[in-house]
Length: 317
Length: 260
Image (cartoon, rainbow over the protein chains, first blue to last red):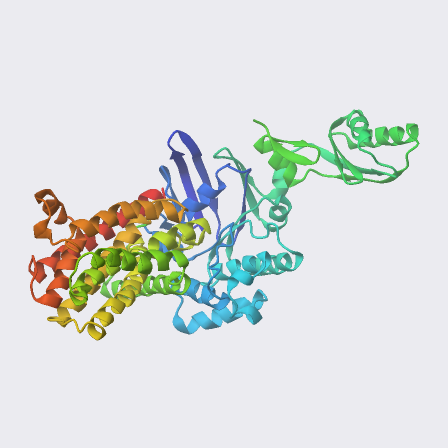
């Protein structure tokens, strides 16, 4: 039995097809990343998997329970952490935890123990009696995740868990998620932080315009791309040099990132020679040069049809 | 998408399921009490608005103040019961806490019931003020106290469910829901015998009055105070129960539809 099994899922809103025949499964204990640009269908998929919305056609099961017909049983084993920190500002941290436990039918004798344990883990116990409206963004995020774990879920939906957070919150959240993964909790992770998905996920699915473009382990996905990156740093770097280095032989694309240039190539040896020649001719000194393999971000950009411009990623219309 | 007919087995499991659903509904209701009971727009729409509206009519009516108590209780129940959810649900949509309720392992019926329960309790609490004022200040006699209790409870729950129904409209703007609700609530007070006895309004008004839950609530409260009424109290109870079931059913369908 799979933790999640999605079969021929299609969702239409009028004439717009938000999801088009989506199929995938997530094994028990697997950490599964779900990546895609804005509007690709990630949220629609999560809303269907959590039973908030329903598909036009197709089915989704959670631990064998059809989310459409056996909704309550399917949800009982889930923890849901949405993209927005949807906590009740007028309740205290403790009241938020207990309310969440009550919604998930956590037994009275376990509720308080679990709430204490989670608030302590997320470094919020000292503030348990404070109303949440005084909390920082990071504290609200931590509380949201704690609320999602109050029913000890077997399957955790995590939507952008660490987006825009302070270092302390980031570290706590990543530690907790790593711990859950080690405990065998199945994690369905949606994130814009592709490196986060690369580090945490057993497999990732890349969805674009409602269709799954690829599903595989991050390392196997990277192997589908030939491009290699050379990162070069000169003793004097300026924006003008970007045009020069992007014209070097065998350079497919070039970006300026801080004081470094990132050059995309399929032939790193030729590029390194060209860079050295360029440095000599311009009286520049190469401070460092390194060659990297393709990143998951490269795979993502290739599959979603986005393009890099000046260090930013833009959608191609 | 939520199903209310999950396969849960025998009577014991059904009992567990119902207990869990009621417990979750009570949790939703308690959360609303802590969060919304003292929000300014609820105080204005639920307490001040019915009071001043009633005062405006009472001043021009030349009747002893004590005789106006049943009508005041009826419109207090109408406005206060139906004011909580049209405020709380759009706000919760905006801050995304409503998704937390929609994705919880409870049926939509329990969600609607839990939301309505907070309006019901709020309304009963507020309606106690005119009730106590009637007893203490005007010595207004109550002929049938048990009937008054049943009438207030059913009327409060009926309008709380009406408020939850209107709050199903998928907006994050409180004003939009309130505007729609007021286009129904305000005409109700004129055709339901609160200010003008139903027998004194034109025939078409009398016909429409039959479709107003306030007619039956007000009629039953009047009976509890005076011993006289347009319909039998049993008919009033039946009518209010039917309205509650219709509102609950329609609210359930609308929440399901609007989350598609």
